[in-house]
Structure formats: structure tokens, C-alpha cells
Image 1 (tube, rainbow, N blue to C red):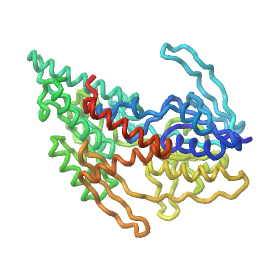
Image 2: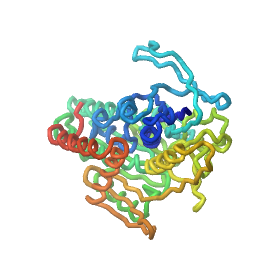
Image 3: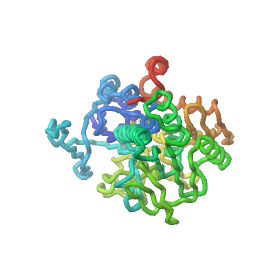
Image 4: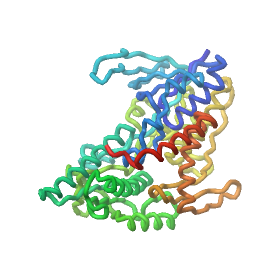
Length: 433
């Protein structure tokens, strides 16, 4: 019985493990193993809601062990440190507890076929001081760190204003005007007002917290239609968020972000959301990479030099044969690639593999609790339809439920949706501590 190992339990990796477990694992046709260094899964596109305090991650996490038990695959909690493609084995670091004590020693895991679904990490592009002084949103832990520091900054500024020892203002700089930066800025504006309503701080919501969004390009959300970019910019500006386009970052200090023109942007906190790259482990595999360390794959999602190793999601570089353009690092790409590989890996290993074809259904970006903008792409016609407002916001919320549906089925998705709706009625709209 062959062993198929999937490293990375993100949007693509967990769905692939679930599908293969259902089709092969439960029938004892293959051993399906999922490896991740965290015990739970959280949908990465919602990390900005954790950072803003809108979402409690514990209520939306999926335990890998529970998912594995229900869907016929095995979960191993551990961090892959090295992959030996010659011996076809994965080296896992020792698993340690909070006190640093060793729980499980370092070990190796053999495989017959390997799927790399590492995801991506923040790309600082070598900007001096960025990695040291900027927070990121690569994981739930990162989002929780940001949320706690932001809440503490608001409380400290409020205390300074009360005793006259300071100006009573929080300066926040977000570097990157893509979806993550825009969505976080919009949610934080709502968070500031909600915290004031619950008397967590006494700052003026309109002036006490200054959010500044720096974007190197000429417009926000460059992947969207220019009309939607302008609409999003106007919406943020009406919320009091300062938008600075055409602004490249030269360096970052502990209390300021310096742009290419030498302008100093004061920052009690700074967050980097300006781009991603594949994890450093990709550089140790001896496989062809692109400029942001992504593993170059064939049209069948196999790595170029090793047909037994596949790569999907943000760590893979797949160039569409039709357009000649690399598919973007989006959750819908990982979802489609997981569906494709679930069928491919279920076939006998000697069969010729089909080519993966990505279909772009559009993109939606949240602009806070009550608005969103985006573009939907029609089926056969391929025509773009621009959407915005409340309707776009409802459609944005459905994206997450679609992800949960693919993992947990209809009944559990509905039950979880009802539970979360009840939770919103009995708890504050943001986390207050």
C-alpha cells in the first residue's frame, strides 16, 4: 500500500487530505498522511478579522486529528526540516512543549508520493528594518499578537491623554495596499469605534487612532478593476483612513516607516502586508524555483525534476498554458488544485497525468462589516461583473462557508453557521481583552 504524504494543512493541503482519505484511506487503498506544525487549521483569508478582534479563532479552527479520524487519513503534528528525495523520506523536528521539553523526538517519515502545500510567508524584499520592526499576518499566532498589541496601544494612549503625559493618539502604518492591507485597515476602523463604545479606551474614534496605508503602486488593489480600486480608496478615505499610493518604503524603524522620498511616517505599530514568498524549506529541495522561491511545477502539478513530488497552493508556481501567466496565490487556486490532485493521485501511478486548468471565478475584498467590492467572472462568456456594497459583502461571507462545506459537509456547515450566528447575538462584536 503506497504512502501519500501531504506537508501543510492550509486551504489546499487539508482539503486534499480529506478527499484522499475519503476515496483511498477509508478503503485501505493507500495510507494518507498530513503533516503540519500546528494542531489546528484556520482559513488564512480571515486572519485580518482575528487581528482586528472581530473573530475568535478558537471558534473557527478545525482540529486536524478530529478531521483525520473522520475522513480516513493520519495526522502527524511536526515541522518538516529536511526532505531527502533520494531516500524518499521526510525529517521532522522534535515536538516540544511550551516549557521547551521534548515530547516527541525527531523522526523520519517515508513516502511514495509527496505533496508540498507549505503555503507562503511574508516577503520583506530586503527592506532594512522591516523584518525586525513590522508585524505580519502569516498565522493565527501573528494575528493574535497584533490584536493584543493594538488593544494595549489604544489603552496606553488613552491613559496618556487622561493624565496629560502624551497626545493620546495611536499611529498605525500598514505597508501594502493589497487585499490583506485594505481589509485590515477597514476592520480596524470598526474595531476602534466599538472599543470606544464599550469604554475600553477613551480616544476619539475619528482622531485618536490614525491608520495610514502605504502602497508602492499607483492604486490600491491592483488585481481588481481600476473602478473598484477607486471605489475602495474613496470608501477608506471616508472612514478616515489615510491612503498613500505611489509610496515605496525605504526602511523601517521602531517608531516610524521611512518612504523612498525620505518622509517619516510615525508608527506606534507597523504591519507588513506587501507581498509573499515561499518558505525557506523550498530552497533546500534542489528543485527549480522562481524569484520568490516558489517551486516550479509542470502542467500536471508535478515538480520539474521529480515526478513523485507535487506542489500546490502558494508555494507552487504554475504557469497557465493558455495565458502564459502564473496563477495568483489565492485560496481558490489551492482549492481547485486540491480537487485536481485528489483525482490524479487516486489513479494508478503508471497512468498518464492530465493537465491542471485554473478557472478564475473572480475576487472579492471586504471593506469592513457592511461593505465589499469585487469582480465576478462568468462561466462560458468570461465576462466580468463588478459588484459592491451589501450584496458583495454577503457573497464575501459565503466564501468561508464554501470552504467549510468542502471539509465538513452540509449538515455540520449549517450547524456551525447557526452556532456562530447565535454567538454574535450574545457576545460583543469585537473581543474586548
